[in-house]
Length: 142
Image 1: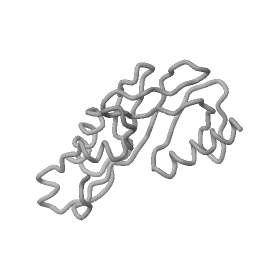
Image 2 (image 1 turned 90 degrees about the vertical axis):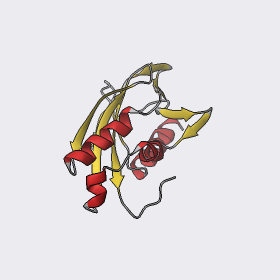
Image 3 (image 1 turned 30 degrees about the horizontal axis):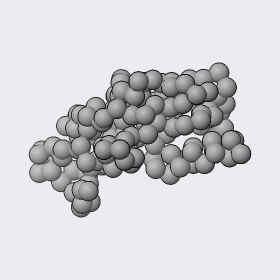
């Protein structure tokens, strides 16, 4: 049952366009993806309510005026670590779109509140996430 839960969590993250990465001894590589069974994935809570990580970043996102003027649309992929205390650390651009959008995406990720960190064997551990930040002029903000 636990292994099914691990796969469900992994598939859920992949469908949400968030890729977990872990540096654990019991990790294995399946189809080029690093898979590590964890008891609990990092969660973002705001006002005692679970929040979608991608939606929280998009809500923090400020579209750069020059990009808006140029009608620039695209995606920036940001990788970051959620520490054992739940803080966002070491955020960096994995694949950029244009410098002003890259900086805006980094700023939005760094503004995220503390996470409830990953649980491994009942203890919080650091974990890595990679996620897309979408710049689209036609998508309404929530």
